Image (cartoon, rainbow, N blue to C red; front, side, top):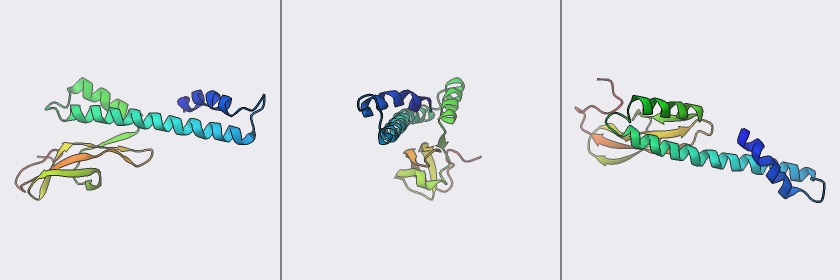
Length: 136
């Protein structure tokens, strides 16, 4: 919300005719500020998801400190990291054969919009093999 408030004066200045802001100008200015803020948030959230996905793919998920810090950032932005292959709608199957799945890269969902920011990747594995996210 802070970003929207910061963007409104510039948008109002662009909509001002003389010394007065027409009523429609105020609506246009606020709408533009909100859209610009969401666009900026989406870009930032997408980059954060990409960084988190790269670290998550490491054997130690980037280490306890880094992983914890990124989880805090994801939570603050209301982004959900999906690591359960059962949520098939957020994943793309990239390779393999078998009846089970292994998560190669988590998916990221924006909880504010419900949209997938970054699709996850799954690999098919034979039924006897375990997969990431499964309890042993």
